Amino acid sequence: MLAYGIFGGTFDPPHYGHLALAETARVQLHLARVLFVPAGQPPHKQGSRVSAASTRQRLVRAAIADNPAFRLSRVDLDRPGPHYTVDMIRLLRDQNPRVDQWYFLMGEDSLQQLPTWRDPEGILRQAHLAVMPRYGIRADLPQLYRRLPSLRGKLVWLDVPPVHFAASDLRRRVAGGLPLRYLVPPSVESLIREQQLYRS
Image (cartoon, rainbow, N blue to C red; front, top):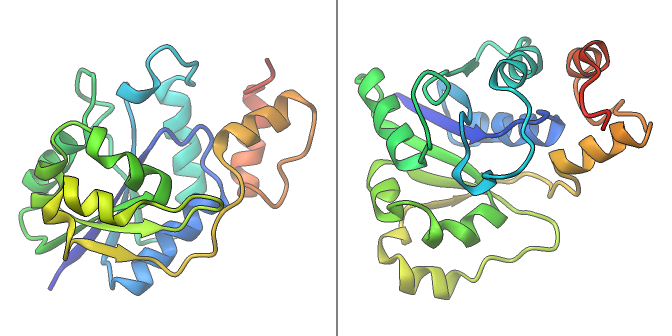
């Protein structure tokens, strides 16, 4: 059985937490490939400052360059927004008809918000959810099962140590003159420094 993982996100910037989640999913779920999908126009971040898509694409390419099982997908960057996960998964399935099983990678905080997403039942019809625990967050599974009955049997918990920081924390660190070393791959840190990202 050929299985792929989908990892969507803003990736502003990508960090070791993202990579640990993707690699754990690859091994634990026997994925042939993990597709990193930078969001074009994230609907939940309308009004927020997000780096240009071309910049985030370069950062993701740098972050995943040393793992042959990781690939960047431009499926959200090459189409008009707003972009919804349910449409993105459908497009990836259409582009990869030989893939038998799909897993959508997410954090536990995103799982808790799933009922508010566009057509969550449509997402669950197309993919299993591979979820990473998040520090200080516990999804209310009984409530989620009541609101999304098809979630039962579609949920896989990944054995990833909870990540205690987010990309927004890294942006604040850069703005405050603090280091990113050991938080992001060196290639990502170099790009952030060269492009003078997140300075203000």
